[in-house]
Image (cartoon, one colour):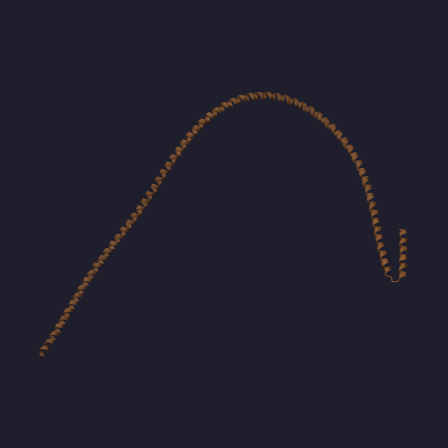
Length: 265
């Protein structure tokens, strides 16, 4: 029992020591880990700084490359333009050569045409000379004919003067005869007009007389119709009388009146 009691404090001390050793180990371990971690962080930071620096270098190189690419593109574009210009100049030169060939050909054609025209002109000059000679001959004949025509014209003018004199005499004679005929015609027209006026007056008088007789006849016919109507109305009135003897007496008087009136008319 006493031994056990003596061992217990020893065990406690050993435990405490072990705990301290473990704690120190842990602390040392933690410190070591912290140092290692810090060292690793510093290394990582350095690596990051290196990477950033490299990125900057790469970015700068990229920018340089872009600038070089742009510069190269510009040079390529300028070269392309120059190449196009050169091809255009070549085309222009070929076109000018073709045009020059065409012009040369046209010039040869024109020279041939000029030679032909000159020959034609020479031939024409020869023909004109022949025609001039012929025309001179014709002019000579024409001049001769003109002299003859002038003589004929002068003779004709004299004849025209004589004709005018005769025509003037005839015109005066015709005018005199015409005035005489006009005077006679005027007298005849006046006489005819008098006859027409007389006949018109007679016709007018006859028409007036005929109209008057026609009016009298119409008036007589109207009166006759009126009398007939009156007589018929009287007969109707007499027939309406109931007394037979009175009817007969009235009819007798009516007939006597009509006979008497007819005699008067």
